[in-house]
Length: 476
Ligand code: DSN
Image 1 (spheres, rainbow, N blue to C red):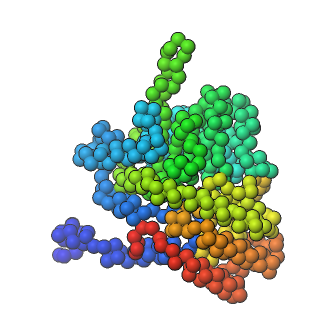
Image 2 (tube, rainbow, N blue to C red):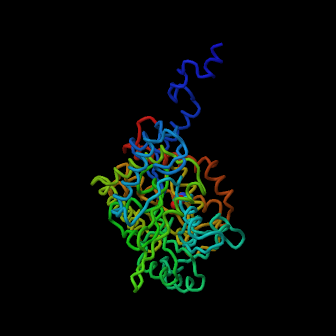
């Protein structure tokens, strides 16, 4: 029977079919998502558009290969090309960040940033050991030990003891003095210098001093800014940190994956000339595999290697400079229109806009912006008391910069944001400022007059955005 023959593999022809021929449902969903990306304005600070070459590596036969272990020591046969590819990725990672291979090691196997961070704590901190990271409502990340009064939210606060440090609630800037004071009491094993929503440079030097005073390691999570670091246009964490983790798909513009860099070689020499060596590489490698992960995602690692090569080019550096220029321009435009941009502006690719003084909040504005084709995040702002009603929006420039947007194009982007927020206020005015979120959404999605306004704005956004090219393949 031909059906059985096909199921058994048979002549294999059915396994050669294109996605379009093989699975119309998934094909259409991907087409729709591509159209959404093409016709929308992507302002999510952690997103970007991977290149066609990166996507090609991701969709390659490397997906098929198991290779548990590390180059040269695998538990599966047939890994000679995988070894070559992983070693090349490691070499490129060190070269891109200008690291000497005798002083730094890199593990390119973490599936993404969260597993990378968890692997570091597993290796270095041990169960119930102590970590200190920037609190999530203040701009830190879940995996920097987030918990609330009611619940330990992140596994990094369940398996490790976490004490957050905070920003000054007035200025929005990290309170390093308080961090120093608390670190002295808490004695963490690791201090994390990393952010998910913080628009200013981190003071790695000061943080290293605090770490040294407490015999702690300083770990940077540079996920958001790794492209900017690679381009050499923001302070590099490598100068002061012992460990650096990153995702590879944000400003770095690669596939969704992660990397861990750590120091190796001589840590210190005492007055008698005795050397103390770093002991980070082996425990970290063991924590990644076999501690936490199985087979590396070789297609993703190959995509990372491609992205790292692209990141060594002048074009990439130019794009990263443009990313910052665009963010700074957008922040200025919003300030000029009376918006409260936290800390007054940005040094990097993102900004946090506090909408409280405008009379609205992140939940409501985010929903309206989404409806008109502008994608961004609601985000809590310093001083927020309710995590359920965050005051702010996080806006970032990397993705649109990859589509070729320049400052003048961001004039239009800022205008769309402003008009979306005006529409938010209009809805609130109709239903009353204290009306619950459900009523707000009902009005937004069901009211004829509002829906017409949303549609007209969405059409304008689409006609503007779709004029810009989009990296990747034309159809998928
Ligand atoms: N989810 C990412 C962000 O948006 O910042 C971090 O992992």
